[in-house]
Amino acid sequence: MSEKAVSFCKKILPGVSRSFALSIPMLDEIMRVPVTIIYLQDRLLDSFEDEISDKDISMERRKEMMDQVVELFRPDNYHAEKTAAEITSFAEFMPVDPLKEMVANAVLLREAYDSLEDFVKEVSYKWLSEMNLGMKKYLSKEINTFLDLDEYCYYVAGTVGGFLTDLLVYYSYVSERDYDILLANYNTSGQFLQKVNLIRDIREDIKTKKKHYWPLKSLNITIDGLLEESNEEKGMLALEKMISDVKTHIPGLLHYYNSIPLEMPGYRNFYSLNNVLGLATIEEMEGNPAVLYGNEPVKVGKLTFLNIMKNPEKSFLEKIEKYNG
Image (cartoon, rainbow, N blue to C red; front, top):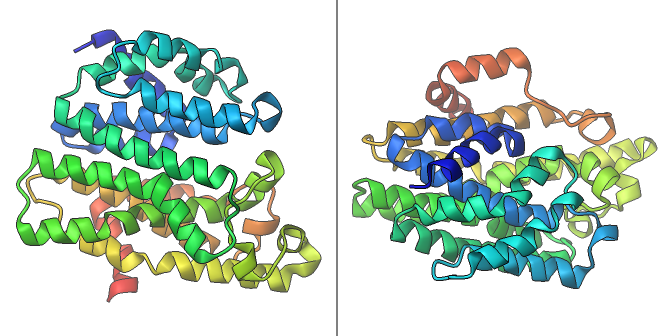
């Protein structure tokens, strides 16, 4: 195992994802390093999809570079250093220093990836390729309907759930019944978290990235109408519909959780923390005009967060009970 490369992955993680930097260390030891490395692989792809300004890269070139990220992690790419060098040349266009550092060290991500078992490399490449297909599709396709939103969230987050589930099954014993339940619900788990983020970040996405992921056609509202405070009644109705949609995924969270093997307590904690923070964020956003008109994204309160961190599983089960009771 490339100690330097893996150490870099561990070091850079908190800078590129505060939430996963909290939950990944909770994983069972056998999964911790693989998930850290593969998360950064996905984050690298996401950086080319979402972080570089349109003025710094054409649509065609953006898609080409996304393909290059996937190529970097093709298991039998024997020219990965050349691929990494091309990716590294875009580091200066990343908006924040941790992303610049991650992109500038793409070759270390590949070195860390090479240390993984063949099975892990194969399934991660499969899911990364799938993620890339969908991301590229929605670079040039607007999200107009809730069906579009479901598909987009599958590609960017359901695929992550698919990889994690493949890894869970590989590293533990899962009964046939539980396997079927995990397969039936990994996508809804990913969609849940992604939709929570897209609801929370709507104002910031429009203001800073000039893009959004709300199905405005189905919501029967325009961007201006959504963010204009004088149109608050219609804006809050749109928010209510978005919250109602994300809640449809909540029953699947419990189905998935109940099928995680007891021998993987770290994974249960990891899954619980990610999703209880999502549930707590919904509570903060529901009926809250600050989602649309506030200066900053709505966040979970400090005391709530600290209580969740004391026992993520207990907090998850308590919060989800009100939806599944």
